[in-house]
Length: 142
Image (cartoon, rainbow, N blue to C red):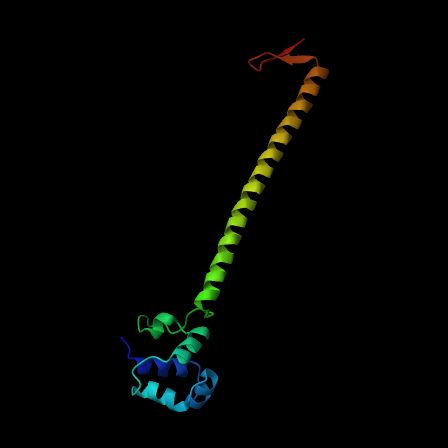
């Protein structure tokens, strides 16, 4: 498992940035980055970690649980916004289920109507040809 200092250093180098440039982008002082990368600061820095995750660094890499440095871009949101998004997602999911049911019902009705129409046409043709069907469905000439 990599040490925190190595993880931060490799993540910064992954972007090809100097400590000064990275510090400016992240919104922390150069001394904070120097402390993180030298190991004199032992705790993760929230702003730096958040920035790295938002830029596509694999969160599991930052935790030392993966060797894959690149991950998916992740938008960091607070708990309140997360709950709002989760609620909106659930509403959309339910709405989608309802739409799927409605479409399914429409298709079933449409198919039924087509069968009825075809049956009516067939009955007209049989009547014109003077052919009738008995209760078993057998056709015979009148």
